[in-house]
Image 1 (cartoon, helix red, strand yellow):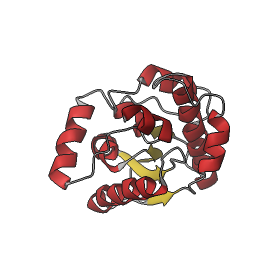
Image 2 (cartoon, rainbow, N blue to C red):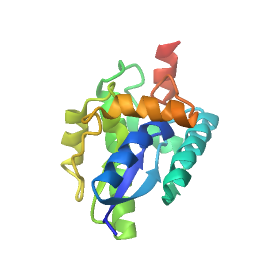
Image 3 (tube, rainbow, N blue to C red):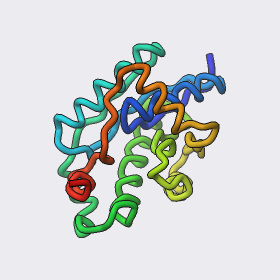
Image 4 (spheres, rainbow, N blue to C red):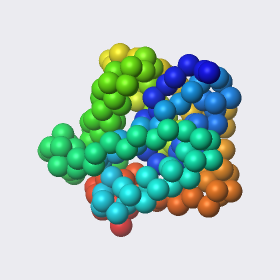
Length: 176
């Protein structure tokens, strides 16, 4: 068995190459779907269901966190008008990483990381700076080793739904 690591997962497509890499590097990932930022709830469920495809393929455990959109909205209050990649996104990253850190401790898993770094739209350095303040965070940049492109290929092969916005209603609003 490899080293257990809790992998915070934002969606099925981002999990594909991240899981592949962790397994190839000898890790034993436990997938943690914690995304209270995703809106509407149907979108949250759709992303979760696509993650289950990847989990089943790799015979991995998935833990779904409660969808607590109200708490997430409270966390970003005052930042609703922020541009994408601004302070609201940093608050959102922190919100999700803190939940992952708590879950890892609860499960007795000493390390955790996130698939957020696979996206070419999310700054790994900013995610790492937040993660550095949380015990057990491992800096793994899933964009490296062609991770983003690999996630696109694997998502297509598996027929996964690839969303066209980050997940929150504010990014959805800005996309429209």
